[in-house]
Image (cartoon, rainbow, N blue to C red):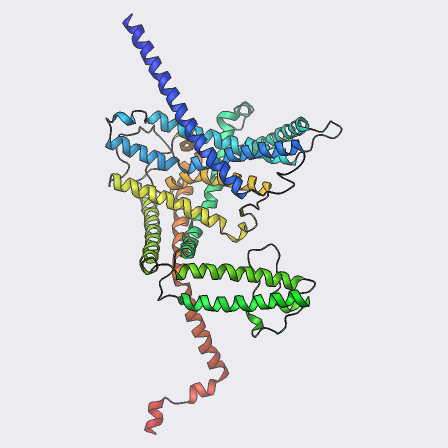
Amino acid sequence: MEEYEDESDINEQIFHNNVREQIIFLLLFILLYLLSFATLCRFKRKGREDYFSTDEDEITVYRISTWLCSFSLAVSILAVLLLPISIVSNEVLVNYPNSYYIKWLNSSLIQGLWNYVFLFSNLSLFIALPFAYLFTESEGFFGHRKGLMARVYETFTVLTLLGLVVLGMTYVIAALIDKDKSSIQTILSFWTYYLPFLYSCISFFGVLMLLVCTPLGFVRLFDVVGQFLVKPQFLRDLNEEYFACALEEESLRRRFKQAQKTGKSYVDPAPMALESEVPIKDIDYELPTNLLRLKNGELQFGLGKRLKEIENRRSVLDKQRQTSSFRRNVVYPVAMLLLLGLTIIAVLLVVQNTLSLLIGIKALPISSKQFTLGVSSLSKLGLYGASLEILLIIYLIVTSSIGLYTAPCMKKFRPKPKSTPFSLVIGNCALLVVISSALPLLSKILGITNFDLLGDFGSIEWLGNFKIVLLYNLLFATASTLCVVNKFTAKVRRELYNRIMVFLDIKIEHPQSVSSTPPPSIQKCE
C-alpha cells in the first residue's frame, strides 16, 4: 500500500512539473509573440493592395500570414536567447542551490526549451513561412469557385508538391554524403533522419553567412555607434559643420522656390561648384550627378530630395551641438574602447580555441553527454566569467545583425518602417530564423561558451568534423583581425598612398630638376 502511494506521489509530482513547465513556455512565447507582432506592424507596408483592400478574403489572407510571420519571428528571438537564458540559469542554480524561489528552474525546463526551439524552427522554415508566402500569392485553381477555401486548397497542394521536391533533393544529397544510409528503408525515416539532416544543412548555411556578417559587423558597429554618439570636439568642429549645412540648405531652398516659380529645367544662377553635386543616397529613384541636366520636373524632384536630406543633417548637427561636453569627451571614447575591447577579447578567445583544438585539449562542439544544470560554473572565473560570456554572445548577436543588414547586397532586402512589402517581410523572417538558429552553433564552435548544445542542436553531424570546425575558427579569426586592422589603418594607408603618388608625379614630370638640383647646403658652399 505504501509503495502504491509513493508511486502515485511520484507520478503526481511529474505531472505538476510538466504542467508548470508548459505554462512557463506558454507565457514566454506569448510575450515574444506580442513583441514580434508589434515589430512586424512597425515595418510592414500599409498599402491599399495589402491591408486596406475591400475584399474580405484578401484581408483574412494577409492577417493569417502576419500571424505566421509573427510566430516565426518569435521563434528566432527565442533561439537567440537560448544560450544567455541557459547560462544565467546554470549560474543561478550554482550560487543559490537551496533557494525556495527557484525550485521551478531545473534541467528539464532548459532541455524542453531547446527542444521546442528546434521543433518550432523546423515548423517555421518548412511549413509556416512557405505557407504564408504561397497563401498570399494564391488565387484558387482554375475553374473552381473563388474564395478563401479555394486559396487554402491551392496553397496546401503547392506546399505538398514543394515538400516532395525538397525531400527528394534531401535524399539525393544525403546519399552523396553518406552512402551507407541511402537505402529504401531510410526513406520512411523522415522525422528521425532526413528532417535533422535538412536542418543541419540549413544551419551550416547560416553559420557560413555568420562567417561573413560577423567580422563585417565588427567594423560597421563603430560607424553605427558614431552616428548616435557625438565625437569629441577636437576631432570635428560641429559649429563649422552646422553653419555650412545651414548655408547649403538656404541656397537649395532658394533654388527650389525659383524652380517652382519659373518651371525651368535648369538652375539659374548656376552653382559655383558643379563637381560637388552628388546623387542622393538611399532612395529608390536614382538622380543624375548634375542637377543642371534634369528635365521635365526632375529638377524640382531632385532639389526637393536634396533639400530634405540637408534639413535632416542640419537637425542632427543641431542636436549634437547641444549635447554636453561629458557625453562628447567621455562617453564616446569609453564606448569606442569598450567595442574595441570586446572585439579583441572575442578574437583572442577564437585563437585560444583554435590552439586548444590543435593540441587536443578541447573537444569538438558536438554533444557527447547529457548536461546537468547547476552542477558547476561554466567558467573558471565563476560568475564574472559567465557574465563575460553572456556579454560576448550578445555582442556577436548585435554585430552579426548589423553586418547582415549593412552589407551592400542587402540594400534592397533591408526592411524599412511602414514601407516594407509583405514578400520582403516573409523573406526577412526566414532569414532571421536561419541566422538565429545558427548563433548557438557559432558561439559553441568559436569557444565563446562552454555550455553544451542541448537537444537536437548537439546532434548535428558536421559539428563532429574536425577539419570543418578548425577551418572555421581559422577563417573567423583571420577575417575579424583583417577587418579591424583595415578599419583603423585605412586613413593612414590612404594618406601614405596619396603622398607617394604626389612624389612620384613630381619626379616623373620634373626628373632633371629633382635629380640635378643640389641640396641647399651644397649651393651655399659653392
